[in-house]
Length: 147
Image (cartoon, rainbow, N blue to C red; front, side, top):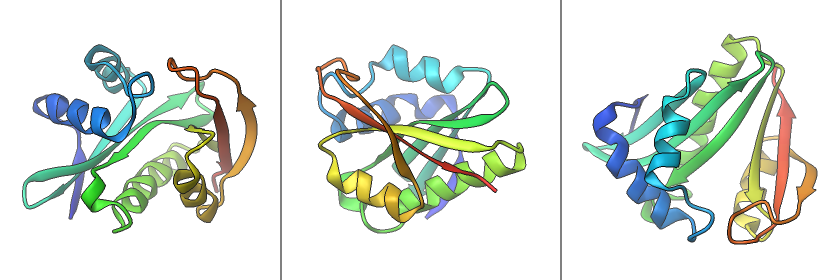
């Protein structure tokens, strides 16, 4: 597996992965995903295996102090194989190089697998947000301090 930065030609594939990873009302429209990726303070990492995109992560620097994970998406057949961990490591290392203090993200309240993954990485639940997603689902804001 290799990690690399986003290229514009990746957009359609990333959107397809996002739509497969999350239900309608949680996944992003093509326009939303493109806006997050193109944001001036965003970085997007892409994981590839044999030329196939198998996952990606979009993160934004917020107010020069925090790193916000906008989304992390890993194709179903590649989950629990280190892809998500590699993407998170890349983002957190970038945050450390930028001297950011905190990293945060949101995850669906009922997504126990994601919450367990983040807890293993040192994240804690910070705040529950009712109706966070367009489909009405609640989310947990989770975060951890960077070095």
